[in-house]
Length: 442
Image 1 (tube, helix red, strand yellow):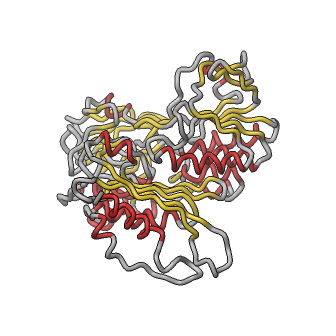
Image 2 (image 1 turned 90 degrees about the vertical axis):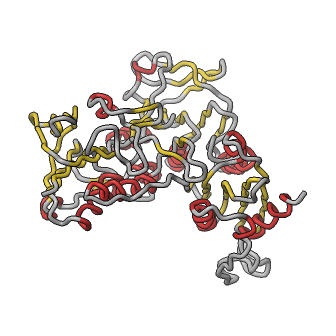
Image 3 (image 1 turned 45 degrees about the vertical axis):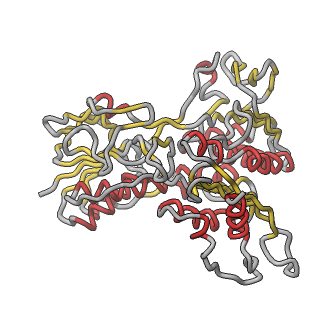
């Protein structure tokens, strides 16, 4: 009988379990995870802070025992890969035998080694990665009038919008020269920055935090030789792969995570890994990718679960399709932006359009800006970005184009659904693609 240990229970761990139950209902499965509940939905944390959903909706129990799954509430400390035993510690020490194991230890929030940060971490300065973090930020937001967010990625933007909705005066500090760096081109990021400014958020790009102020309680930061006072800070400086267990177990890792092959096998026999803890790669060209997304994790977890049951399925890489809703603004993208495409060896050419979403005769002023990036030598689409209502719906089409290597010419053949209450006859996505295709011929 197949005995499988799933270590970590987020998107990848859950997907692995579902795949195992479908492929081998008789398999003996043990889930090892330290949470007092089964699932946490971390992508919802900023929206709970904003008040768009109840906090209690972010955690979920699945009645694993009724599914014939053993749940060990503990932290896995080491895998004895020779003896095929997982050593874990919770309310006591546990030894969990396996003949297949799946590491799904996710990510850890990155806290940069800023001057004085250790003195105020948890005392007015918080990450936003757990229910405990959320509770602390919500409580503090009720006490203060000024807040700082460090980091202009998706979590940082969502947190800034949430704190503004809570009545705080918010300053967003991003060390790069734009928000959503590595995801959007600068011209597209400027649309997001304008939205932030219009909603009352002070957005300071190119602003590196050098020091945290406060003896034992957060009082502000020094960034670019400028002092910013506040009573609350959310640090959203990104995430790192959760590789501690793999390192402790002698399993190969790299700067981006646990090393895996296309079947998601690690360097240890019988041990797979999936989700934010692994070093992934781009489906576009096979190059290393730092993408950490729940959707990628779910796909990887499914494949790891099936392979742990004897399948031989291949993971081809991630497209990096993302979407965020910042206040009322939808921002989405997939693949490479122009800069990343050039750094990956492509000769990028782009088509960008700004358009009303619906016909001029139809009520409403909703707009969308779409930018498609292609390789000039081949016409192959390598990425796209969209800002505005309906952004993710269009980017999902681009995601499929990237997955299957579709060119601008191929995309131009697409027949999209039309109704004046939904879109134009000549959809903005196709207009952007046609514009990029014309630029290919110049």
